[in-house]
Image 1 (cartoon, rainbow, N blue to C red):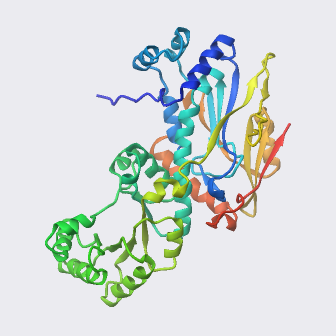
Image 2: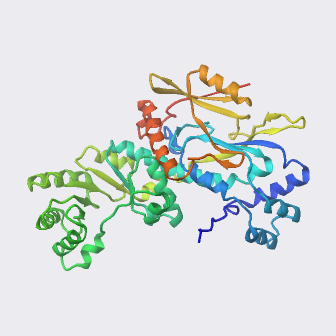
Image 3: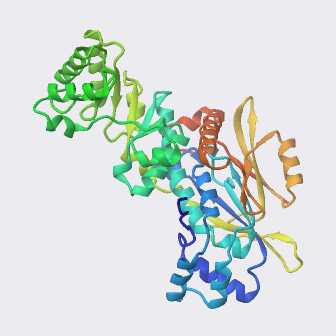
Length: 446
């Protein structure tokens, strides 16, 4: 029996449906509109951020259907009137979505997602789009800073127990977009085809009569190439016992894991001890409340890989990307698409359908060029003349997801896109301290 696809239609705010009701009454519901997702600023004055969750947004739009159960609940709770319920029962998004390719780096003002359709179709998607992009982009941005600090050493996602069970699955995927190589969460592995990893916690050592017995049991089960946690009791004695346990099984120990104490000092001491024991191939995995700053400090040690949990799934102190979803153009009485914008203090928006490109100089990004122009061919020509690399790709066309924008292929493409995009940024972008955006944004309007 095929699995039932969960409707995403009620992953929304009530006011989106009440706006729909009002627009149906006023006649504005059928006006063609353009909504845009962007950031006014980057949380923590970070120098760049990372787009993640795009594939999940496409899936959510496909599943945005008001079935009998949803309609019955809305009716019972008198959320909207009868004509609006009739509209919702037949709702199917038939518009188009373009956006920055998943994994792309962005700066304030970047139009990372553009939804085009009738007001009735597009306004309903605001909350579900933002909830996905704000979470996943926050995690991916933190993950990118961590993998950058790691300097090519593997990073593993281990944060499932520190967040909501569904958020853990999304966080694991977002971390992989930004360079993490594996997750401890099995459902994330199953759902998104991620590599899973993990061996044992301190409880495994404590349940045995002594450390030797615990190590022998783990090696017997997982082989000498396993990773043994050596800090339950005394680290130097744990290292000796771990190496001995692997050799007793006929091999060299794969790795030791350090999970407490002065990790910088311990990484150096343990490396020296392993080398003195002849276990030169045994690696050191470091965990314990790591963030990008701790990883940067550990990058100067012989640590070989890093396991990150709490900080990663919480966006390393910034659990939302602070993205907004704003109406930037709408069809006027003459049937022409015209720009609209907010002018309120500190929340001004730039109206109009926008196209974005990244201007490069010798392969290094120097500017984000945003062109506000309703004619896409003309906008494309402007970007081409400026030598800008186009940043937006089609995601949904006439209500249908573009092939390859979801699933394993989309994730693999996002991983590669992030690697290339981050490598384009100037050197200052890699600094962990607060600062200005890595590249300036220039907006051209007509």
